[in-house]
Image (cartoon, helix red, strand yellow):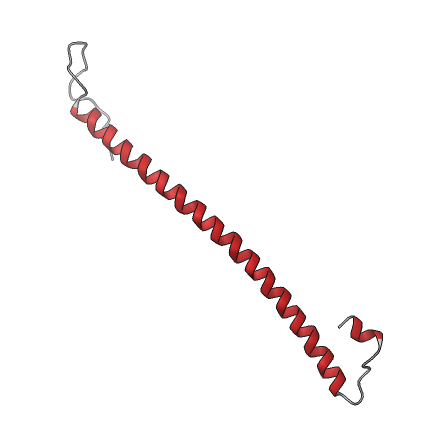
Amino acid sequence: MIDTSLSSPITPASRGPSLQERQLRAENGALVQQNAQLQGENRDLRAEQRRLVSENADLQQTVGDLQRELTRSERAADPDSTSGTLLDVYA
């Protein structure tokens, strides 16, 4: 935890920032840099997430197409099949 109490009061005669102020500025600078890096990583991860969602939708479409094709093939191979009827249209 950062100590926010001042060891000595700041007076107009003080020259330059106190040690504590310099430390806080340095820590703030590091946090600003880390925040920018994390925001960049977050953007990259969101882009990857969008890509994966799209890929998943494509794969689900392919699976659905393959399942319909399999159903049609099974019906066509079955001698008791209703192949050639409206049922194949909805398979």
